[in-house]
Image: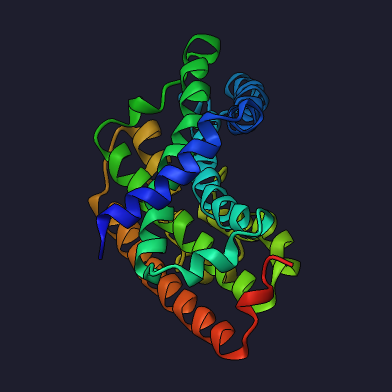
Length: 263
């Protein structure tokens, strides 16, 4: 693996962001809107719900973590779509660059796009609503790692769909996370779900991440088992996503559809 090529690929996308005010604004705008929306909803439930009465901002904290997941996945997808929209897709795969280098570059660059959008929103949440995700303490780092890996995994699966079905698969890039949100138990405990759906939900790292978040904020207790499960499941999904990406790439290559991807 050539790290100079990885750096060059990442630098291309950083230049696109840094030299475009609309792109920067887009990265910051939606997370900030989410903070305002869920901040007021969180404040309402804090004042009117027994379940959340002892935990200020639990819903807002969940919204921040979910947005981190969403931004990680969308950032990965967007950088891949940029190659298609700019008609650079064919050049990317003609160049002497390995698939592993492309995946590594997109994975590392996506975290910067995610942080550009989320950091201002996280900062605003403190003075406006008195909510800080850092109240989660050291476990926050591990929860973010699990969320990021799972977000990238979803990004890999969506880009695999783009390779297989072409730009017509683009809408799935925007909807992918919304399909899983009901099973992720982001804003409510897993007990709310029917028994059958609980079994399915436990196969997702999201349930363990957000159950752990609520446990820490409401009781102050850290369940290391949930953290280990969330990271382990995220790694499994990431490996699965990489495999599917390779399968889709070689399938598209054999069918000769890569050359028409940007058309």
